[in-house]
Image: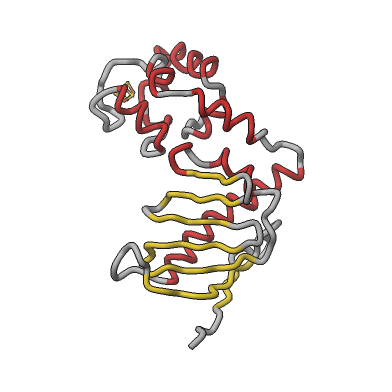
Length: 204
Ligand code: SF4
């Protein structure tokens, strides 16, 4: 029997996405006891999906350019977003949880739409190309290299590797916020660039 569709308001004044409908809920095939939720947003997302690549760390996002489909590995689950506005989310506990998460993602989608309208979008192909050339060593070479563990990692190299997989944020290297390490920030700016630093979690 088909389930009744459930409509939720996300943002009354949303510039692109305002509502979401839960179309279907099924048992999650990869995680017993959890559910897989199929949703539909109230707007098409063709222009926004490639730009979302620059909003998540490289290890957390996979963009299929041919199909214009993006998959995010965030909140310990896979979330696939299609240009029609369809969204699938696995490993979820309740429908309410899926709504909380989709609200956070659609806030980013709406913000990206505004940037696009204002001509402030980044060139996602350029970002993709730059990211493909950045390895942990290029980041490590600009880190303080003290292995102080203030970020929660045992070494600066471990931190650099986790940065690229999206498990750490650049902002979590405490020393980079100190005056004495301004040259390390400058090094990152010239090596990876401010856009990539922001994708990696830098907040200046
Ligand atoms: S806080 Fe920064 S300097 Fe300290 S271990 Fe982490 S990455 Fe290295």
